[in-house]
Image (cartoon, rainbow, N blue to C red; front, side, top):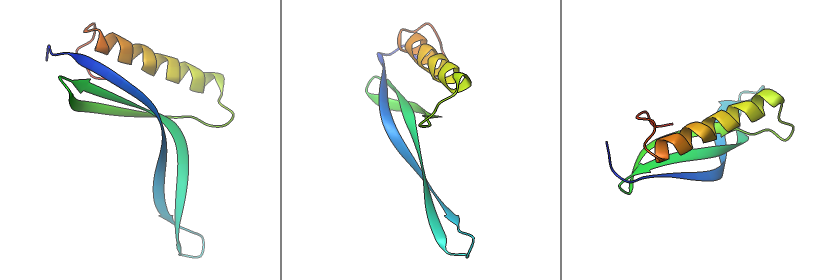
Length: 82
């Protein structure tokens, strides 16, 4: 690696198509935060973290850890993309 790194943080609604109880297709939506890592302007990784309307302390800690890892990666302190 070694190029210029950037992390984009954006709200993202993940959609999943499943079969409903009557066999008809149903689309479920999950809100979350999408962390996208770029190196020299090229996307190199993505990580999606779910965000509920009533997050738990564990949810908050998971988000903080993901953001921390992303910032370390952006500043070349970590080799592995978050």
